[in-house]
Image 1 (cartoon, one colour):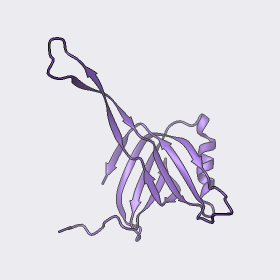
Image 2 (spheres, rainbow, N blue to C red):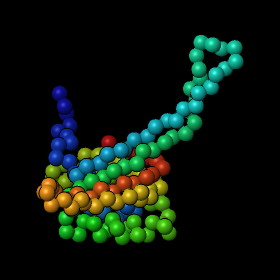
Image 3 (tube, rainbow, N blue to C red):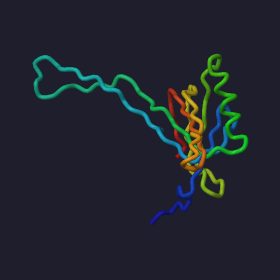
Image 4 (cartoon, rainbow, N blue to C red):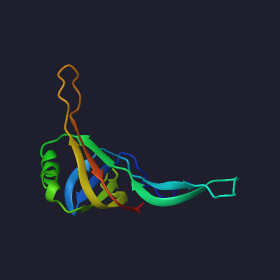
Length: 143
């Protein structure tokens, strides 16, 4: 039986860069890390190949949400500073529909990769969405 009833249903993701809120996002993809391996064959040993860990590779994080009044401004202001920007820290906090924290992830040395705005197609009425992609060099979890 599940003891903790704060499960991730109706989740939104609150994103903060250096403590400044970029607002809530409806989806968060790409939180992950991969250990890059180097294969080495040992002379005289034909039974296996050594798999040696060399470095960590962090995948880019993509955050998406419907466009709303005032949602895009803080993102574009942060991206406009990117060429002179020192790497930032970021917090992605998963919240339930009551605004209670379910889990949080902390990213180190974050830089913006791209922002993608809505596609305006009059023949297919859809919700306008925006996507923010972040690169980072480390992750910690409070989950």
